[in-house]
Image (cartoon, rainbow, N blue to C red; front, side, top):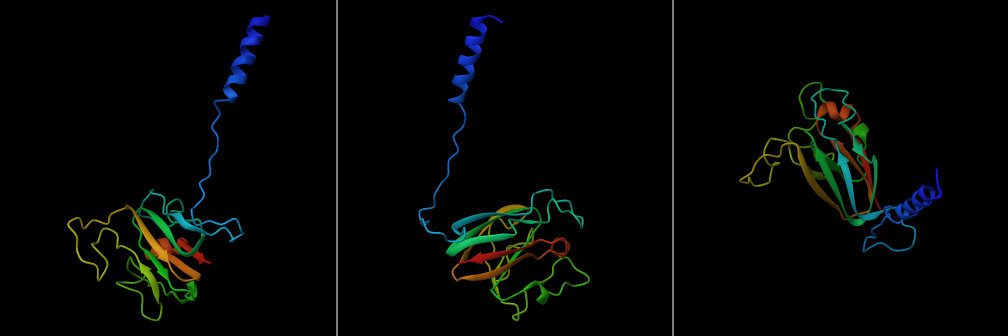
Length: 179
């Protein structure tokens, strides 16, 4: 290898360092420099993954990521729903041991959870029109892929589940920690 090839190779290598991507972090306008336990004003959460095969044990689709969600009091969680799912967010104090899964049927709560299990949010019933109490729209399909934004005005730990029986049984459960 002659000097010219070595010089050209080193020059190209040095120039390529300047083309490397520079990581960027966005800071929420409401964030402060003190430690708040990682909570943010707005959080995006994956509710399913889009591989929506209708079968129990579909771990690729039947999950909520992350399983523990931290958001500031007054903040919003944007649930990115991929597939046939229905979100239910319970008020603080409700635990999984209080949920009775029926032996038959597609949904745990049909149409709504009992008043003994207070909810903060009952999401759209997938591909079944608006939830009870919500006016009908010109586009009634709530099919598979959508975003449902939920505001958390009060501090506490909120249980989140998928109301579809096999999804819940597969572990489609999360906790929103509001501080």
